[in-house]
Image (cartoon, rainbow, N blue to C red; front, side, top):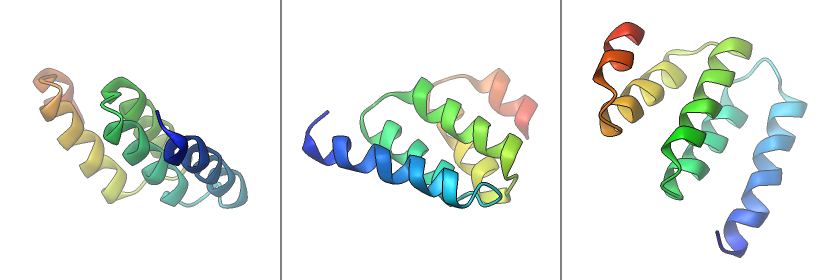
Length: 79
């Protein structure tokens, strides 16, 4: 929640806007939220990316996050 996060979030949003068909902005947004221990926010970012720019990397990150959050049912459904 420090200054780094305040600068990083707009960068992720800009990446999403500038490259809507690429997963990079969603991955970055998810990693920002995960580093803040906001696992629900990270999962939301990865899910949004899977809708707009599906990729194996996004699916793998979401799966790992769900396992970390002990949401094994959701993780198994994703796999």
